[in-house]
Length: 182
Image (cartoon, rainbow, N blue to C red; front, side):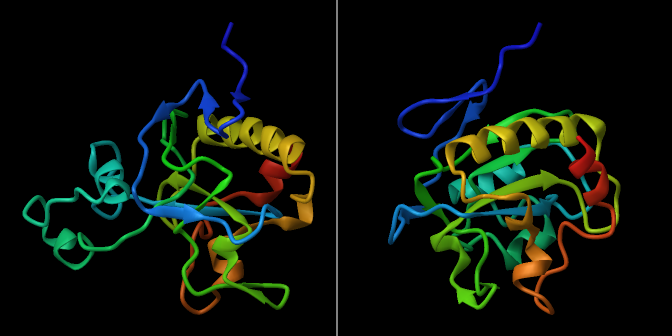
């Protein structure tokens, strides 16, 4: 039997691996009303390894892969990452602003980081995601919707929905209908 997912008063999850990122700040208001699904793999299209954690912690070594030379100085984070095997990693508590959306707009409101939660799935824009990832994302989404009721089904979007033309994730490999059925 697996332990149910819970959130404490400081907005950290259990069970989850905690890797507190320095790349966050205070939200301008308490409203959390959007869930943004992303995809990431480092190096691109390679799974496993420490590199996503290192990026979000500001510790990515540019000498480890040629791709990293262009991104190692980025100051980015997400609230959580769901790895291919379903492992849940949390970088930023949900009551803080993670730096995941960049220049973005949802229904005419800019700066989505101000009111959004960012969840990264380990993957690419074209690869299919795993059953373990969908299961973990479903459980996490239910918990977040209970904690933040303004996150309705209509307010669960992809990064590509809030930054069209700039971002394409989670991409064609993400099955929105399957997530909704779960």
